[in-house]
Image (cartoon, rainbow, N blue to C red):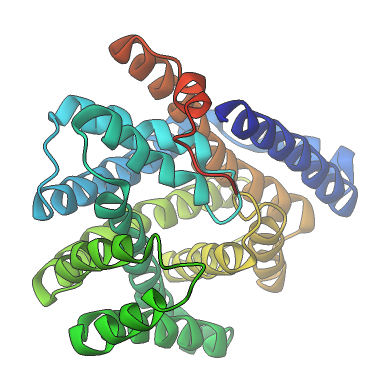
Length: 329
């Protein structure tokens, strides 16, 4: 089964190449190459470090959640499992992150229905935190307010719904009566008990604050890219602009449900930079530099983590899939 994921990852890489080609044509390939040449690559490790800071903060959020619902793992194995799922960053809607729950079950026997809600809670707090980061910029630039508020209301409504045990249990009871779902309906209740613990006021606030700091680091990454270009070109973009552009584009890319938001996120970042009167070649070059440092850097870390996890477990991920343990999408 994991072989199918590898095929999806390779297809995403191919799609990423097509996206790069399309944007290269948009920016004029020769001018784009010149723009890459004008970038001071000594700053690239700084941008990678900021992205890695995002991953570490999100790992601690995972650890916080893991301890709340009582998943017994060593921190080393927990880190390997968390990072290994980064290889799934280019799966549609990041649904491949459910691999996390299957690896947790391999390690300590925790049912998938108990651990999978962590992934839902991670996405809820990620979206809420990015919406908060974007709100000020949306008003300052008078752009994207409807999308940002729509996404914010949707996810906050989801939290309110989950927080109401009475309403949630009544929905689960109705699902139990559906013939096609009756055999697995009991798992819904187990999953709900986990997610209910994770969206209580304290965990919600703590996790959202961690998410906000994590995503702010990648926003700073875009700011660094643009500041490097500002030293050699006539562009001037503020930190507020960078936070809004990166945060808003992350939301748009996630809503699109495409692998890693490919194409949509790049178009949003580039489009917003062009709206700020930044030349197309610099806009496209900045977009691809930050996307390599965030999306594709995560995939590379995921590949390394998969390698070390397999060495630890002495078992190939394909073997887990062959036993029917990974879900089909």
